[in-house]
Image (cartoon, rainbow, N blue to C red; front, side):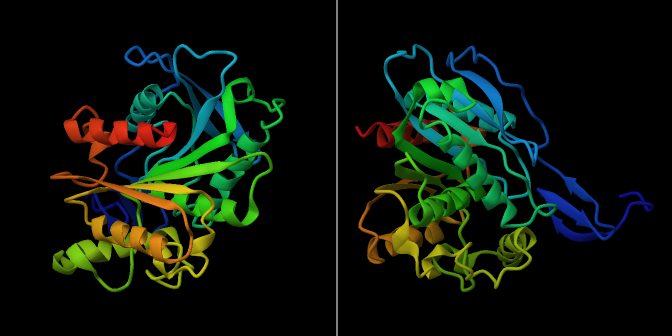
Length: 317
């Protein structure tokens, strides 16, 4: 590092560095790609503004061969990246949504939300809820976006996300369960390696390096400076007294054997089963894989299996 450069106040490499002068350096997730007609999947995408005030857009995806007289399930996706890196327009997410939309035969809205630390929680949650309300504005077929007016089945809405996006998807389902959205029926939620945590180490966390555990906790405190800690229901939903109000009838949680979040995510599944929610919980585990492996290697056997499981979950097969 050059001597003239400011000292780091918080170094969360390889993701983000926050310097003492307030400047921020994002080390990953900065590349973006435009919407397109994907040559491999034939999925068509385009961007649409969902909040003029905050200048926020989502990326919409439409599968090939759409029957104009047939409505498609609607998937609303929230990207990961510790709330602080990546975007809905990152190559990895654009590629994954193309693959998922083609396999599941859904119309999808990939939500871009403002990131921390410039916009601390609850801003990412509030932006995501604004996106959901924008989607709901199409239920009568007269919203601003023709794809949603013409092709979306608002009686079959699914919320999904990975890592921090999985955390967001859970909280959107919680908010939907308590507030609802007129004309929208959230059927299911897909959480891929969701970013949940807790104060006391459990399972595989007990044997992890202290600096790794501290890094995960520090990422949360960066995202939510006003948090009560790692047992805050926002990061540890097993402590949430309102968990039973989750607003859907089924949940699929994907975990990876070598992901440090694995046991935390399985604990969430157990909490859902015991809290009185009453829906169905499914889990699937990818052996030998790490956190969000499917984004880095989407064609590997485990990633394809997860893709097919997700598609089947959405189609009801």
